[in-house]
Image 1 (cartoon, rainbow, N blue to C red):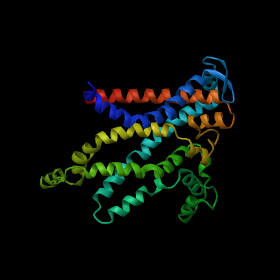
Image 2 (image 1 turned 135 degrees about the vertical axis):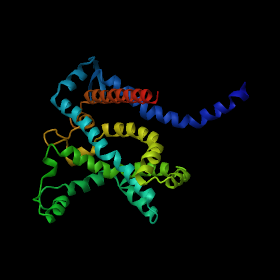
Image 3 (image 1 turned 120 degrees about the vertical axis):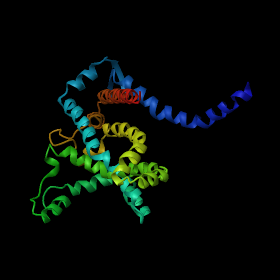
Image 4 (image 1 turned 90 degrees about the vertical axis):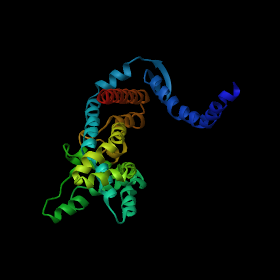
Length: 290
């Protein structure tokens, strides 16, 4: 019996450090947040049980409604702007014959730069007046300078554009790795049959990366739903809450108002929304496969 379970024991021993860290840094804080959301507190010290009062108060606050819809707006624009960009870049780099390594490094370079530094850089790009880089470039074309981040209808797409530039490189390399794993004989056979570049793209390339794109889609939704430092650094949620997010509300409750139970309540709400979205997504995928 010992021999039969020897491999299992060895596997558990190897995984034990990761499991301990996972429990300590993820599950324990998660459970603590759930518990705290049902209490009033002084600092982080729980005082008395208040039930769903924290949830009721944060949901009824005007900032929550704006943050809720803005978060979905970020998700929408990230799919419109950011989802296709890595796929297009990966296909282009895969088709390039010369300097392929240079382009791989170039597209991944923004991921190496610290996120806060990139946000500050884009703050200067979007700066209002004649000193902003975007206004300088547009001024060469005869356009007057604009206060870009004060326009409520543009602020979220502009932030998503920055997020796409910041993170598209890593996703591009994932797609590129999958493209390079496609059997070249498929393209050769298609070319012999007279298929052009668009036919090869439609009937070979896209079907081959479909499963990968489906997985990265839900991961992107989860990632964008938790956007924080981009609107914090660029706009601090403005103008007039036009770019605030649920995670930014968590930050403000926790580190500006020091109201940790309400911050925990919003965190639990975010977790439930992501759980619901993931469940619906998996159900739709399962139905589509059947």
